Length: 306
Figure 1 (cartoon, one colour):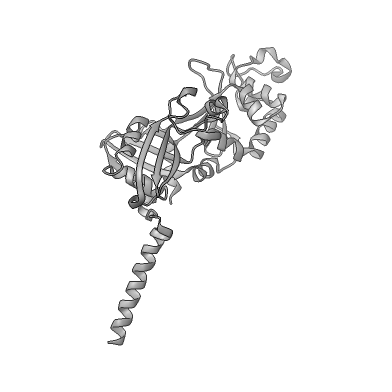
Figure 2: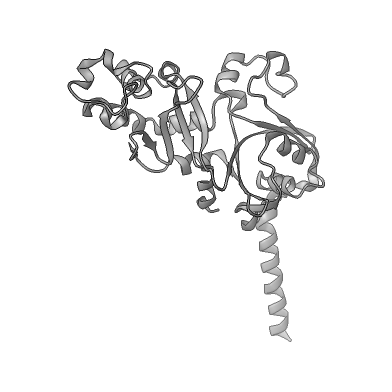
């Protein structure tokens, strides 16, 4: 009899600890399965669709999982309102998005990276969560995360004029024909620009050293952004055409920054530059082909685990 009672007590302790692990301090935390990638029928790799799911959070399975991953107790949520942040935000809309009207509007416009802003009322307190949505098809995995003129990045990150010149030669904003002291007698692979592996060693190394030294700041700026529209969560979706399903994973932005920024800064096989798992390259195409562009493979985040 004593052994049976002891066994029951041990079982109750295990159940208590398990419940405590995911409901500590009144919050319902996600299970390991919920932290990993999930698959849903159909496609929702669209900002407006994600907003619609959040706004129907009482009934929508994915929205409820997202809220739990964010650390919210579903039983205590009073309301959820999700708003799609347009590419070009208007100053008159700041109040609508729950943004501080005293914040520098130009900084919000230039440095904000959020696609969706979720306003959650829980326990009488209003909280906001900014999401960045990165989407890809299973057969086309690249996603642009930032693109600007070199001068903008120079003001933003403070690199010197020699590095700026190297990057402008790389993008083709400055034609290498106008700088014979850089190219010497070499025949470049492209008449319009210089590939990173064609730059003089000292100039290329200065660029690599700067990016390596400031990698955390740079990766944060291109993925998270700054100010009131800085991102707190990254929602990665990968649409699988074959079976009409969407695989998704929601990660806090610091985890995403650590993941995509992990690895060395080095020249890629095609003459661009890798910053960890991020590719820095010439934009190309139209318009503004000479801009500097940063790309990631969103589906790689599914390998980040829990």
